[in-house]
Image (tube, rainbow, N blue to C red; front, side, top):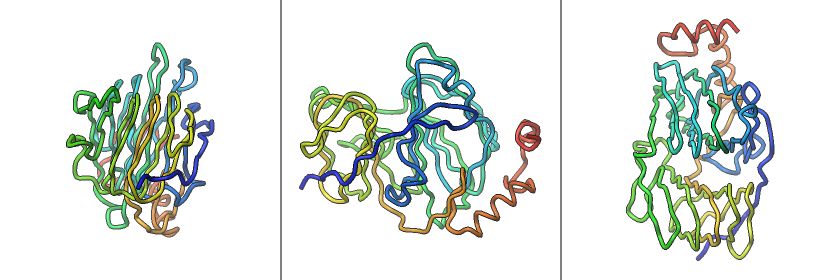
Length: 284
């Protein structure tokens, strides 16, 4: 049985951070349609002024953020001491857990800078886990070529190739697919979506264009045909209550209130707060 399309979502232009123009594929208004996934942003432009102001210091708790740079460069820093650059083809998989403050600052890129940020909800039992950061370069990922269709395996397993992201709190399949012909995946995950970022594809005989996100049925084989670029993401729903306040996602309003109270009082980070965050975040 081949999975059919449940819904097609159109990505919408929005502004985030300090003035970054991007496309919101899904987010707060789609709770809990994509459970365990909370948000997907598609960012990028030929014009650095659309993204150069970036995402200065900001907090997260209760989620994981996955930043995948297709083309371009983003400088990163956080409250647990990580600094570095996410280059073309690299992935940053960050577990906010009990609380992290970080910044992501895109650098000018000659050409069409492009990337994605996915938010994955953390299960109730792991909401307050210790924050962690995984920085992966393009050399960490294996790709598969099947009759002209190229698949980069970021997380999960595809045709015996396993992604380098291990010990996930939410078992996730995340592939970047350059389609030329057919893509077939016999996943057992219930929540499956495909976001087309280049060209067009056909799913169940229905044509879906660039900028569209397709949510598929919960059972069956995934079949995509055509020529284009898309990301495929799949996981199983948590089926837990969601209390969402900006960059923080918990299970109850009381937990949200506590998080923002701790943020205000300076006890949000469970450990020493770096001086640069004290001066740039807490003094603002």
